[in-house]
Length: 334
Image (cartoon, rainbow, N blue to C red):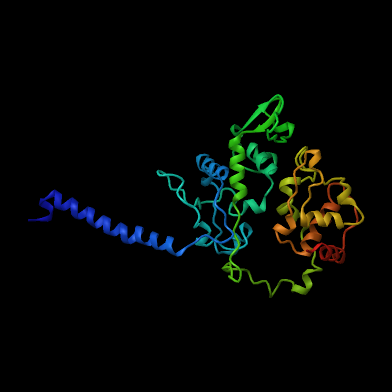
């Protein structure tokens, strides 16, 4: 009997071949991968709020513009301290029976990679304002505003999370309050941190590093090299304190005319850069994270940033020497 003359034999053979190929190509390798990959010791499972935030991340299409993968190429080094590995995703399970959004690795970077956004930008105040209207903190942002995650009230109730939205970005009178969905989405974003590798494990190297040894300054010369303080400020500080240094009223303090920035002794300013600051929470300002420590800023980079702040936007404080910076950094080391 010809295979093509019996539809049962024909379709049965096709289904059998499909089942065999699926098992060999997809199912068995996936089971082997699960058996040979375990979560990193420092990784944590998502809490209920963080998992709800992940669902909102998917539902609002965030994965269409943001990746969660640090490729092992040098250009990705700004997104994480090391290239991503399979173990980074080992703790992520199916969200439910019907949907498998295990990795959310994404396919393009219309927006920045979010692998370590919880470390790069740990401030919930910033995230809420950014979700309400991205242009309020990043003027050139093309990200849509997620205003439906917030609501206007005449007066905030006890327990409400008030978002300090500048008047020019408000849609009407009243106080902007974050809905539970906004807080859940922020909780998920803050949970995105690259776990540390176990002690003694060498991190994969970034490929295609530029060799600047022939033309660039030596390690001994870096301390005296004038770095671009404006560029470093734009990378590490501008999102909160704004390009004009004036911050955002009720959210991030102004650096223009700041007594801390202009102080003759730069110790407090350097300490804030490296260790963060919560001294103005009572005034409604957010807690500043330890940006210098998070970004692993070198002493010369710290000097470039604070000198940019001390001499920009009308500030006219004397520049700080590298020796002053080194002495302060040495004194605040644990």
